[in-house]
Image 1 (cartoon, helix red, strand yellow):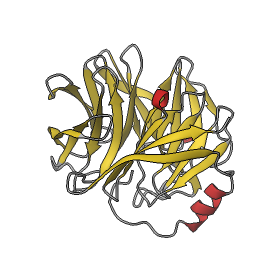
Image 2: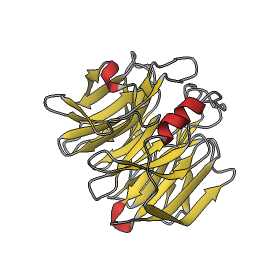
Image 3: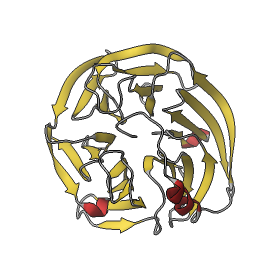
Image 4: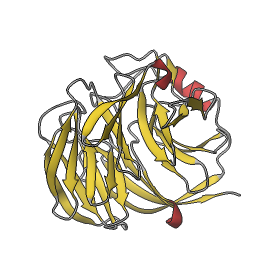
Length: 300
């Protein structure tokens, strides 16, 4: 997502590049439920904690994605879209990526990662990363290691044994936004190259890549520039659903890197949740103040 919440102009080239590598959609979506209204204020990331069975939604609030204003919060919902607690945890600044490990929910928040006790609904720890420029998405591994992207710095941090360190950095990451642990791999979604820190535009679109978590070797999944990639989730079939925040697209990417345009959105489609065993996908539209769940079918 972007630092300032405002419409972006001059993206025709990006749209054309993105459209040049998609094929006809072979995925059907059917809306299951939708939430709009005053209870949503720049919703950024939605995540299902499987242990508790609840969805958790990060909401940035009205101050923007880089504002340290204490205006952000987490909303707790049921899987069928009913709000259990609107402001379940408050006092955050601009919360974005969410993931859990055991009984703890981890949330990225500009230059820190906040740990929340899920049962108590209370912040129990924070990991401050002073040199971070713009922490964005976050994921966890089975052993509890946390990976968090710093999109502006083109860097990925890891938090392990209660210590934060740089896991990987450099231009080959293409200013990573979305991150997802998949076995011994870290799947990353690049925002793009030629990154402009003023408006977050890029000279070229980002690609989906795979990083070996042991060797840190990087391999490309989508060979061609794909989008300003934001959320990444497994489809449960060896592929991925991926969002493009800036242009407003939902893609499906197969394991061999073939890209399908599933649906177009207004700008601001953010960090999604996919519950593959239920064929359910939940999409936050940040600038629209909307959260929608769809049933999906992938053509065999």
